Length: 181
Image (cartoon, rainbow, N blue to C red):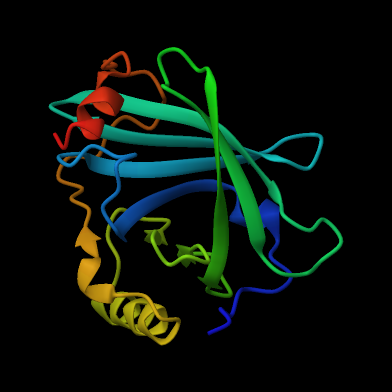
């Protein structure tokens, strides 16, 4: 089944802070992470700086990457994203798909997946989302062939500092996540 993606995504409007409301669990995120968020910033070369952050036991884990349009001449919101791992010694590039399945007209909530349907994220500009909007995004994901029973809500109990300055875990979250912690 072909996946429907957003057309004519305005990367400038998409840039900024997004909070993870729910996702499919993955080895790339700590199982006990809270206050997970992503911040996107446009680079002069039309790529996007990606900063993913999550907090575990009050410490900030983060990884930085770069995203770009998979087809610069196309109008589909199919991005590629690259991170270097492990975050504390960035050596190995890991590249994946980041397909925008839905963005509302005000760029306040989004549904992001990828063609294998192994990963899925529900994002919002605020740490909490209206239940009706959430249900609509889950329905859309289901229509696109995602196993929505795998969705796991992301807790946002204590909003972290707005800045990137907070106690860091030195990248150990990444190692722990590989061992299921």
